[in-house]
Each structure stands twice: as structure tokens, then as C-alpha cells.
Image (cartoon, rainbow, N blue to C red):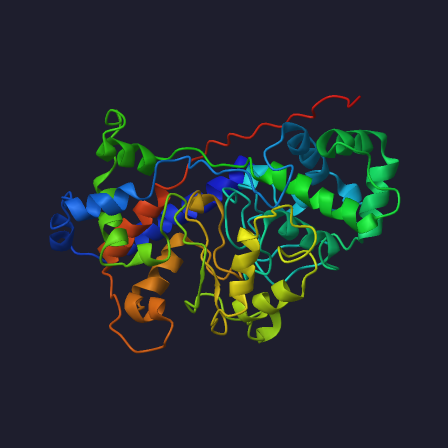
Length: 404
């Protein structure tokens, strides 16, 4: 469990970094920073980042998606350390509610340290790919992966199935969620259903509304302008974000991510200095998994999700590409990058300030012109990114009482 002190430390670091950037500007440069005026085209882009929260339909590949009994069952499982082989690690050990469902560590630690930073579980519903490398094509299959990983929970389907069968409360909740007792002979079927219950719970994790959302809705005319003003630095940073910075090519839509994969140079190496292949290896793992949407555990008989998975085999992924993360609640999820190599938002912005957005998004490696954002522009961009966060955590623990 994180203390307020831990979160406050990250916020303070972000503020100090922003001030350090600003210190590099002259008084004349600061005087030129005025409140921006948004064109109709820019307003259209701003409006595309909402409204929030964005409603997501139930997952057709998961027959218990959105069902209250499954959500309650999944909540119990998420915090149950007995899912792990040694009974010492739960999903919540790395995805801590008070840490925005992450852990604020450089790399996650289960039974041992893993190669990548722990991503938040907020706002995952209706995503197309899961994990830094997209090795899972559903939230329920992604929920199974850490249970089996020797460095995380290090369990087996049989271990999980036996736990559900033998524990009176878990067995009762399984029956209520799936309409029948857990199979007495098919360990893997019970194991997959555990993943689907875990996914049903995670789908409920949605971040709250932010200063940006209130500003966006005021522009849309769907609510009165907020009583507190959206700061001029945040507005200037927003203008850079949707314009000169080219950020919306990757960070699009209400959740500020297109959900696809790019090589930005921010995260390139696994521990020990070995290159991390990212999406290239993720596609291979996806196709080899018996839990993908091409397999027998997909509850969607229309085949729409499975078609996307087939297309992934044809995807031309470059070495070292990783999934674009959401920017919502970004201030709470430091350190940043697949390997947690950037400690502050200012470090991330400085990195991108030296890149060319056209060649970055083209994926063809052609040379281009770097952004060369000024210190003032970098500071404004950091302020804007901070406005995408809220300290309000809508989730509240509820043990659900005894199952009968």
C-alpha cells in the first residue's frame, strides 16, 4: 500500500522538473507566453479526447463481462495471495489501488523482478491489445499470463482450479458468476474462467474526471465553464500537444492512446543491456498462446475479435516497438517507459522534444526535423500532462459479505 508521501514525492519531482525547465527561459521569452486562441480545427481535435468517462460495451469474448456476480468474484481473486504458488503474491501486490493500480517501481516484482515496468490497470476496457508488447488480445487472457509466469505468481492451472474447488467461498462465487460449479476434471477451463472473472473486475477500474475534461466539456458546450480556470500554461501545452508536438498521432481519443505500437527510443533494453524486441516477440507469443481469441475459450461466436488476431500475424512490427500507454493519471504512475527508465514527466518531454514526429510515426526510419521544443514549451507541455490526472480514486473496497 502506498502512502500519501510516496505520491506526493512524485508530484513534487514533477513540479521541480517543470520549474527547472522554466528557469532556462529569459524574462522576454516568458512575456511572450500568452493565453492561446484555438482554431476551429484545433477545437475539433480537443473535443475528440472526450467525453469522459468513455462508455465501453461488455467484452463479447468474455461471457461474464459486466456481470455483478463475476465482478465480485474477480475482486476476491484479485486480492487473494493463494492464487500464487507459494501463497505470498496476489495481483494486487503489483497493481496497488493506492498507486493508481501500479507499483511506482522501475520494474515489477513478484516472485522475482521482471523485465518491464508495471502498467496501470485503469481504463483497460475495450482495448485491442494488452501488455507492453501486445502479447494478449483480451483482458482475460492477459489476466492469466502473470499467474503462470515463474517470476510473478508462478502458479499452474491445476493449482488455481483446486483453490477454487476447495475453498467454499470461492466455489460459491464461481457458481454464482458462471451458473454452475467449477468443473471437477477440467483444470484449464476453471483457470480460464478465473481469468474472465478477473477481467470483469478490472473493466470497472475507470479514472475520474480531470481539469482537462472540464475544459474540454466547456468548449463542447455540454456544461458551464468551470469555476476554476484552466491555467494558461496548460492551455499552451495543450496547443503544443495537438499541434507542433504531433502527440495526438499516438495519444488519441478519450483515453489518450491509440493502443498501437511505436519505437520511440525511450525504452530499448531489457535488464543486462540486452535489446527488448517488444511487439515482434509479442506477436509470436500471441499466436502461440492457446488462450488467444483464435482458440476454444473465446465466447464470441461472431469471430470479430479473432479476425483482428489473425491480422496481427501480418503486422509489420519493427524491433523494439511497445504499446502506447494512456496519459490519464500519468502523474501517479512514475517512473515512465517500458523499462521505467524515465523518473519524471520532464525527462519524458525532453526526450520527445528532440525527436521528429513525422519520421517517428511513419515507421520507415526516414530522417526528419527534430521538434526542438524550447524550455518554455517543454514546461507548458508538462503542465498540460499534469492536467490529465486526478487524485480521486472512484474504486472503494467491498468484501461483498458471505456467499450463500
